[in-house]
Length: 212
Image 1 (cartoon, one colour):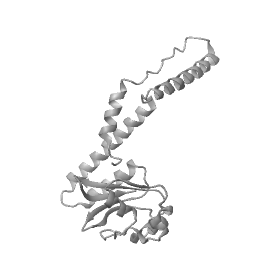
Image 2 (cartoon, one colour):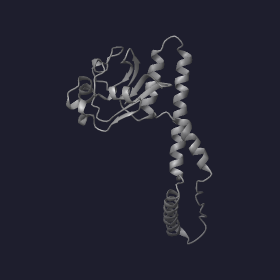
Image 3 (cartoon, helix red, strand yellow):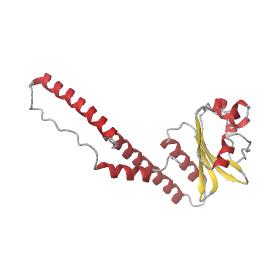
Image 4 (cartoon, one colour):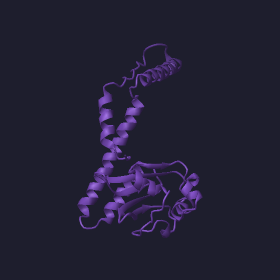
C-alpha cells in the first residue's frame, strides 16, 4: 500500500534473475574488418537485443533493464530504511528528527517535490513533518494543528476507505470546486495538482498518513 514495499520487489528481482537473457559477447576480430564491420555488428546486436527483449516481454519475463531498475529501487529502499533506523537509534526521546527522516526518504523514493507526514489523533489529522517549496507560507501546512476533516475531501475519503487515495488533478476534484480551504491551499499556495495519500495502519487502526 505504499512506495516502501521493497522486500517484495527484491524477491521478484532475485527470482527472475535466472530467467534474464544473457547478452551476446561479440568478438571484435570476427566478420568484416575496420570500422564498417564494427558498425554492422553493433547494428545487428541492437536489432537482436530489441527482438530478444520483445520476445521476453511477450513471455512475461522481465527484461534486463527492468531487473536493473528493480534492483536499483530495492537498494534505494534499503538505504532509506537504514536512515530511518539510524534516526530512531540516535533520537530515542525526540520524535521530530524521526518524523523528518521518514518524510524525507518517502518523498525522495516517490520522486515527490512536496509532502507531509500526518498523525491521526482525536478523529483528526495533525501535520508532524512537511516538505514544501521554500517560498511557501508556514500557514499552508501548519505543524501540530488539527487540519479539520470535512466531507468529500481526499483526507476524509482516506479515513473512510483506509486505502491510498490518488487524485490525478486536484483542481478537478469536487472538494476544490467547492472551494474547500485545505484543498485550495494545496493547489494554489503549494502548487500541487496530482496528489497521493497513503494511510499508515496498525493492524486495522488508522494512525496517520503520508501525503505527496
